[in-house]
Image (cartoon, rainbow, N blue to C red; front, side, top):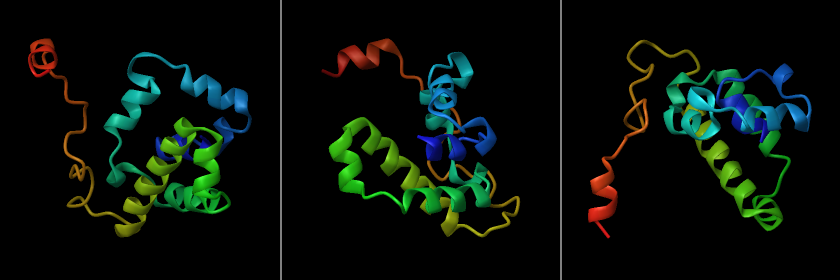
Length: 120
């Protein structure tokens, strides 16, 4: 979970204990974890943070993580993919690269309620 929050822009000093991570998980509004993940694009992640995440995740076996809990496995996969995407970009990004929206919109797509209920 520390890796997820490093990719979302938190500093390692803010994530020293499990309680620090729980505080991040319990934030609401614009700072809530789900929203931050939905808005995350690799171009906005610091290269060194992605490198740090790579070093953290390489210590763990993906199967073991999923066997522990599927939810943790999903976060593991997300962090691994986003870190890999960022590391595939140049270390120093030009304006051309920054926030170009590799995954599309920078804000979550809000669907009208009738879309959700009419397409069943």
